[in-house]
Image (cartoon, rainbow, N blue to C red; front, side, top):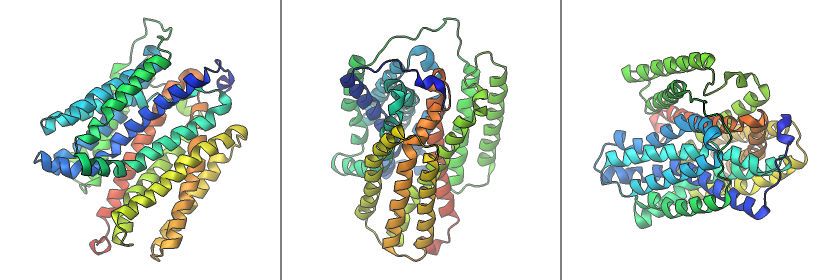
Length: 434
């Protein structure tokens, strides 16, 4: 752990801290939720606009691409603009664009508003972790990261359930309109409770816009390539072009960052083993998590003959374990920061996944549910400590970049997991999926 985090800036008023924490967590919840909730409404939106699914699915893909590609840029800008100001500006953009999505008269307008919504989410999500770290003293970082981890998991798992309820009662417009009143309240509470002073930065500092553009292009092209592969288009001119363009953009980004006097991303941070190792572990776990969360409904419905309601209940049980357990684990980590904490979580989670894969062939419900519970417990043990270790892996002055890379890495890992799950389905014999 880096020494700078032991330098406390003074604990803020407890009531004020709770308000800021609530605003930050709800902002994170809304941003993550909107990345998954639209999947349940996609068929309805496609039918409503009489569109092709290949075009309408960009209401989901466009949001995720814009959000992931822009995170590091906004994290870097927040160092000059102010983390709290950036967060609230992002929530304002997210709220206004949500209204635009709900009132969109055509699919192109909806797609445009979704991209703007993704940029607003990137402004907020990229620096939530840094805001929380500055809000809490070093001795409570584990608990804070546990709360953040449970919020992300709850948003990911509750999306289909909440989306289905809103869709069945109010229609697809409601999944966007519900963000408007909540977003307005969050911005107002944030203005009244957050420190909105501008950091003391030199006015001569310039943003590395060329590096930012090449990085954003590399992320967007990588996600586009994964999307093509997930759709079964493993070969073809568009797939090859996306992959080649991604490699070129990434190479250009590395060259620019090595030469720029104030780069978007200081590449020397990747020599910090205490930062890189937990970051990679987090990305791998979220990749596996998304493979499971996407493939599990198909298995439970097709093989175990579960109803959609029963599948939803399974996911809610997992969400409950993560939501309740992550803050509890975080508190234990704060009191006993054992260096093998995340390793134990990884081992337990992997054991649960291996057990599920083993018992899936036997088609026996009891051990399957047990294996899922073991995975959920391992994921719960892992969540808070790994986020704390990622943030502790860099000095405090680089907290915004650490937060941005963590968020971007998590989003990219989830996109990779979604693509891997789809690839698995593509290569499955058809008789196994019926």
